[in-house]
Length: 187
Image 1: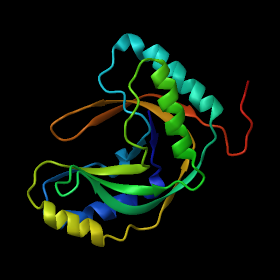
Image 2: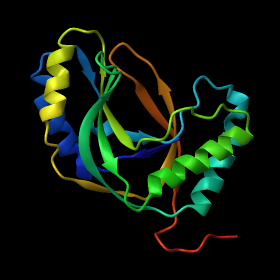
Image 3: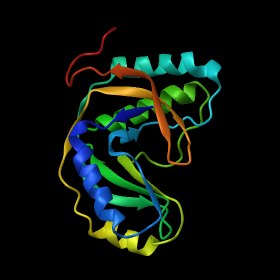
């Protein structure tokens, strides 16, 4: 389950990737138009579970309000040997954190394991393929000033991802509108 990043941030994401690409690290950069916030990764899932998963997503969307988030700092996951390059998000209204918490609860009720790490709102902008240039990449990330940009959070999407040699391919199974901010939930 994810929130798609709006077109409003594509330029900033592409600019960050271009700047970081100069480090010469072995990174598979995510297409700027594919940027999204993963709220809950379900992993390999039995197709028979899809109706229950969609039902959970519909309940989450019907009870959650949208909002707006903005790009923040760049970072990596993986410590001294980075695996993922990301741009963090300022989630001041807490919309992404609330959606992630609701997803954890809803999918735990369906038998999916809870995430052991705390939720950190971010857009994955690249996956590191090898250690080549890792030090230069870490230095470039530390120096990067992310271009300011905001995007609205108006919907959630159930996304099917398929790993491919050139990066992940994403298929939106269903996109569900969130309530406008301060709109009471429907019964």
